[in-house]
Each structure stands twice: as structure tokens, then as C-alpha cells.
Amino acid sequence: MAKKDSKKTNKPKEPKLYHLVIYDEKTLAEKFNFKLTNRNLFTYIGLLFIVVFAIVFLLLIFTPLNALVPKYEDVKLRSQAIQNRILLDSLKHQIAIRDEFFKKMRIIVMGKDLSQLKTPDSLYKNKFISQEQYDSILHQLSSSDNSYFQMLANDGSNKSISTLHFYKPVSGIVINKFDPAQGHYGVDLAAKKGEPVLAVLSGTVIMANWNPQNGYVIMIQHPDNLISVYKHNSELLKKEGDHVQAGEPIAIVGNTGENTTGPHLHFELWHNGVPVNPAEYIIF
Image 1 (cartoon, rainbow, N blue to C red):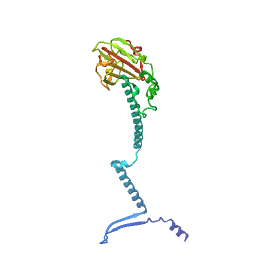
Image 2 (image 1 turned 120 degrees about the horizontal axis):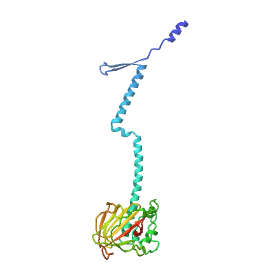
Image 3 (image 1 turned 60 degrees about the horizontal axis):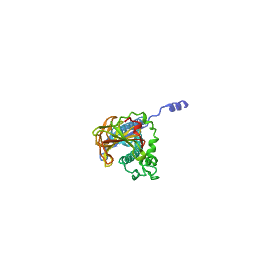
Image 4 (image 1 turned 180 degrees about the horizontal axis):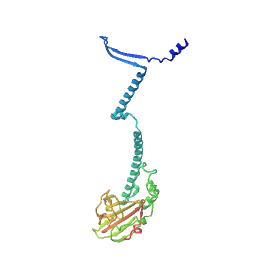
């Protein structure tokens, strides 16, 4: 008896059989007949999962549904967009400061009082104020609490301009020297009417227009925070935004404007927002 029991226990179990039948509700006729066991049931479920996964994968790859799935590239692009927005805001602020600086330079060139210009609080930490009644624009520039000029003085570009090679703006005789105490921030060079006026350095024209006091005026922005100014021209050969090379003709000597008594060029050189004596760097 013990031997018979051991044989029964060692006999493999038969797999369970599942029979799936689909009938027609009206005729009760058999439409579909499918047999399943424990083994092939898991096989069919696995195959079904693989097919569903493949279909979903293809839909996400080749249809607009892939936009719903977050990607590493999207996160990286979003982060880059945020950084670009910050840089753009900073650039807008710097451009506004630059435009305000050029506006001041235009007023100086036209011989007007700089204190008439109101500086927006959003551009500078402190308002532009006249601490005392100075007798010249030079004193206002050198003592004003202007953060743009302070930035120019501390931006690491304060190297000596004496190492630069300046072209002579025009061939002529100095008839009026640099004298900031008298409000004369450049040198006057008597020259023949019609002579070309040359750019002393390469740069970009930031102003080219006419005003009653100084006639036709052209102003050029150079590297190293240098600005050159040319007044009383009879004609301007360049316009705002033009890039000029050193020694290139930019205007024609004339006698325009109220502050002139004959054909000559009034030439100014500004460094870091402060007028300097051109005769110290150019042999006239």
C-alpha cells in the first residue's frame, strides 16, 4: 500500500484547461472556440502586453502625442530660455544706460547745460543732481554721481590711450588750444575750406547731425571708452551707425554754426566720459 501511495504522489499534475466559447445570442450557434491552459494563458498575456507597449511606443514616436512626454531636451531648453531671458533683461538695461550716456554727450556737443537733462531713477542708483553751481560742463561731469561714468572707470579698460596711434583729423594750424576752465574742451584747427576731415581712430558713428551752435557735427565711438567729436563741418560723409576706419574721410571742413568765425575744425577727444587734451596724443 505504501508503494502505491508513493506512485500517486509522484504523478505529474495535469494542467488546468480553460475553454472560452462565444455563442450567438439568438441562434446559440458557436461563433468562437478557444482553449487555454495555465501555461499558454501567461504566454498570451505577455504577448498582448508586448503588442500594446509597441503600439503606444510607436504612437509616442511618430504622432503629436510625443509632446505630452517630458524630455531631457525640453528641460534643458527651458533652462536655457530662462538664462536667455535674464541676459536679455540685463542687455536692455545696459542699452538704456548707454543711450542715456549718448544723450548726455549730444547735449555737451551742442553746448547746452547738462543739468537740464533728467535722468530716470530706473537707470541709476541715485538721481543726477547739481551739488553746486559749477561754471562748466566739465565740473558737472567729473563731480556728478553718475554710475555709468563710474562703471567706465572701473571696467578694466582704463589703459593709457597714449599707446594708441591717432590719425591727424585735418592738416591745419592750432588757433585755439584746449582750455576746459574756459569751457573749451577741444582744439580749433584752421584749415582750408573743403579739406577732408579724417577719423582719428576706427569706430562707429554715434551722432551725425546739425545744430545751430556748432553746425554739422559728427561723433565717433572708439574702443577703450574713447569718443571723438568733429564740429563746424560744411558736409558730413557718414551717417549714424556707420563703421569707419582710422584715417577715413568722415566730413568736409567748413564754417557752419554760430560759434565759428572762419573755416576750421573744432576737435574734441573724450576718455571715460571726461574731455582730454588732444594735443597730448596727436601732433597737429
